[in-house]
Image (cartoon, rainbow, N blue to C red; front, side, top):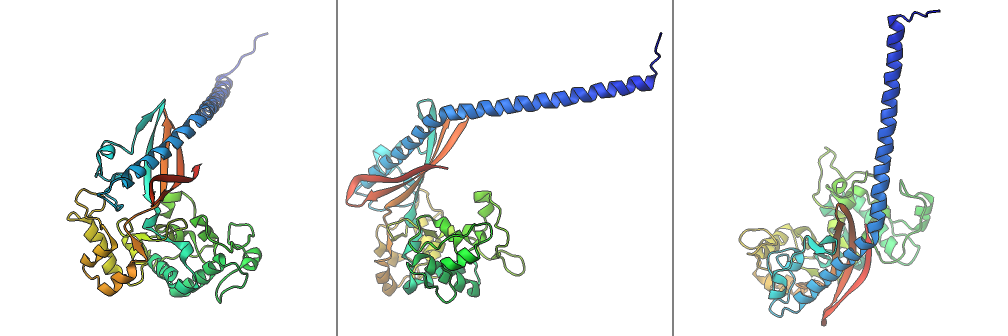
Length: 366
């Protein structure tokens, strides 16, 4: 018996076959991709130990550079044009040929970046007596005066050891009963900050205040829903910096006038925008750019008298506020083996009385 299959049936069968082939191809491609990812993860795991030791070596390399720089008697200051900061000045023969980038080590290599923390104000030094410093910072960030009172009082409550809130502040009972959006209930710190990111837990402080206008580019994180924006009513941004650019929880306490930004300098009592810009312009040299060969860093705080707009009365007040040395540094290391990379961060601290004593306070990977 002969069965006659018409053209439409044969076409339908062909379509079914093609669909099956496409599905199988997609499944095979997905399986191959999964195997590739698993293989890469396995290779990364095998390199973890080596990457960590390369990262630690990068930190030791940074410590060596800082020790060598402290041994230079002719330059008893720290500035952005020096080798440790990535500048062009060799400082001495030992450091002249050293590079901070792409240093080979075994099967891999590392690059380092050294950032002094004395370029910012230590936020743990703010208290009831000088809370105007935080209000000034909030003004620079673009926070309205009314919102600044809530942030300032809540910040003081976060640091003080008691549970009695300031007038517009917040203590543990507030965070337990009505926590910030995106966070589970928590207690107020009631002690000094260990990490500046704790600011994000304080009432009134939004991610935009903390990170500034480039926040999304820095973190890749979305703004917490429900957070109040610090953009102007017309939708225009009112600031170019965030709190993270102005403060640090870890430093020796004196601001380095050779490395601090103009915004940080404006936190110093007596400094306005014009004077802060004059300080930066004076140290930057003729080309007006920090970190270049023609920089003219201040050798001492007393040399600020040469800055246009500086008066002797203000200069006397700066002796206990500013410095030209930095003691606390964050070391950022990128370690790599072939195409596999890992980033590490360390905090190191100089001993000002012993140039060869640079201690590592912590080390972790991102």
